[in-house]
Image 1 (cartoon, rainbow, N blue to C red):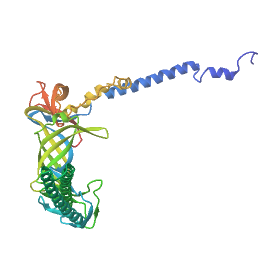
Image 2: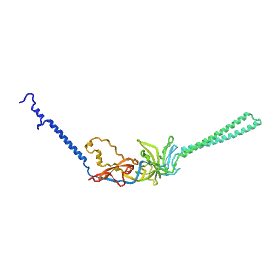
Image 3: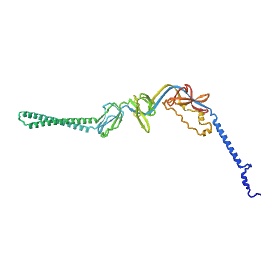
Image 4: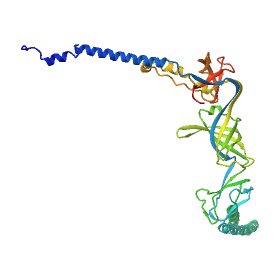
Length: 428
């Protein structure tokens, strides 16, 4: 029997579990069990992270003394040393075209002819005008002679008091006018002669001739075509003086132009002959920059021998310019400078899960020296000592992107440096 104000049986059951323990004791036991499991997990992770890595064998490369050749790569196009555009200063209709593509021409050889009818008509008109002017000179000369004789007679009569002073003045003025008319007539002869010369030159220009010995690269005209030279001289032919000597114009990156100088040797390839290399020599490095899409380059010209005429204008070429060559240097492969053993990487990452979870200061990326730079900066390679990878600090010098010069006494020839890792069971 229950008393008034006492707890019901269900409420008492909620405070005591089936084992007779209060609920608070059960919660503490669950917390303790969870922490124990977490500790076991962390211990297992720590144990796994500190276990020695799978047995690994390392690939090595030998530190050697040898020659270091540094080249700067640039691309460009082949072009003739001398290229001439041939046009016309005379408007008219093309009557005949005497040459075609690839024809060899001599200086003065006829390339094309314009219809000369109009120019010939002007030349005949000018010749007639010249003859007319010469006739006028003869007429003026006769007038001069006549007035001179009359002046002489009037002067003689004046001396004998048979002519008045007015008659003498009239005769003198007539002689002067005749002399002036003769001068005008002679000037008209010179003018007519100049016009005739100009018309003859125009007639001569209706025959288009080659200004050089060379080869026809382009022909932009056909018989019957009308050309107008009133505003701009139209280009009819493009000639190359000598294709046995060509030049290669390349664009050198602004980061490399300080290493490129006149007289340096180079080799280049073209897509038409991928297995063949051609020699060249730097003849000019231009000061004027060329900017394309924000990229700054400087033009360089290379002299090229093309005796067999295998190279053609406009071909795209990739050149390698020899900017530095030095022998008997201590060299280490660049792969060794980039390599870090797995154990060292794991130590850098942290020895356990806690180390991986905790924040670390950012590490600067390892940069490889640019080709050609004598940096003298610090580098690191790894060697095996007692079967364990050991870091060796070195100073780096010149590099060609494949091997790098070692400065100082950090390494010696014959030392094997680590370049890669190969785990047991993995086939190389």
